[in-house]
Amino acid sequence: MILAADKTHSSPAAGDAVQTESPRVWRVVFLNDAVTRMSYAVMVLRKLFGFDEPTATKHMLEAHENGRSVVWTGLRENAEAYVFSLQQWHLSATIEPDEAS
Amino acid sequence: MKRVEVRLSIQAVAPLLDLIKAVADELRATLAVPLALSEADAELAEVWSEDLLESQRDDCDRLFSLFDQEFFSEGVVAFDRDNAEPVLRACAALRLRFRATRLAEIPDDTLEALEASSTMGELNAEAQKAFACFMFLDELQKIILKYLDPMAVEEDE
Image (cartoon, rainbow over all chains, first blue to last red; front, side):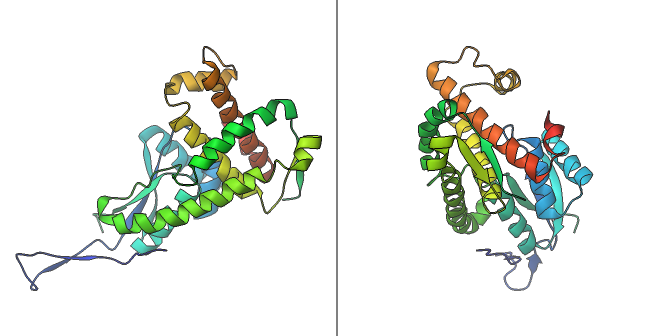
């Protein structure tokens, strides 16, 4: 189900000499939608991420106001699994590399 | 979660089921929430889509299993530990699909005002029925959320 694994990108110009690793840390970004009941989103965030209620509510409100909220960071494989779970609950989410990592 | 029986108005709910079923049929092949992965993850998206569609179909089937002989004779539907979460997810998927299709022409602020007042406003007959389904599915979600966490729904109000 999860294809995962960090990908290694090589530069064609540099041949085999230079390889750039993709970031090791990835973000799970929870995206807002205008339809889903707030209490439903909070319940799902608590269930999937183990947040307490204030933390889940904070992420829900951040997504509601800014369109997105970073709810988790870590290995890409785990981040993908979280996004899949959010999608199963019909909450929109994506992953993005944490450039600071 | 103990078994919870809810009595619904057969007269109010039964006429909505055909439209909810039609929308559920669309969800057999279409995700309620399109995947938001980048183009680089196309292969991942393809694999996920199949699994997510299967999950979505199962959830909708669980929702429709509520409307059995007991519902049509007594107006009663029952939630328990096994079906509460699948039905909750099915309601979420169906509401998103209603919004994206049958209620797509209604601006967000108008829909919010309609939800707050629970009136049909100036909607045409087709949109009125879709809106009634949209609100009914919301009520089902509220009932389930209330039993999963009695404090949760109050925060929405």
